[in-house]
Image (cartoon, rainbow, N blue to C red; front, side, top):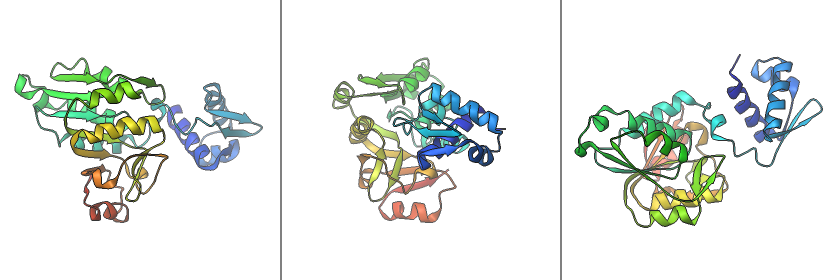
Length: 262
């Protein structure tokens, strides 16, 4: 049986897609008992992610914007490979921007553990600028990383700092690379996010970077979300997983984006 967080993510995905679910149908789809699904839905209702109904649940208005701890279980091996490939684009001494999200968190970890960046000496120092509190928490103990954290108002769903206090700092700095995690990306609408505040700070990060790298697993390709981060013309590299088909990646290549399938 899958771990609880994996089931919770799957249940929330079903609810996001269909608006409501029934216990028996969910139990069959996830290979779990009806009693287990009932307990899962009770827990999600306790956390105000869903509203329980007789025999199932309906989605709450906020449930599309899942807390990071639930998202972390999704496509974990793919995100780790994407992160390692993305981190390989960085050279010692460069300045890197990271927004919030599970994939960019993996990028931060990959950068922090690269032997050539952590071997000591000022010539191997790495500067990281982020608006993500969880990423800052992990990197602050890394002596070879100069950490810069934006100001702003924290969003519990993503641990990101947003708002004017976050964007003001970015107007004063320059980045070699920025790694942007997205909720969706397609050629027509570009990189997008569910929340307009997150999209705004992510756009500011992208505007300050010499190279914009979007890190997104294949489930996010050819999709769009509410608020635009940047147009596809502003994206230099897309790092995705090997499950991304040619049909999904070729439009990006045709638009001039360098696609890496990790």
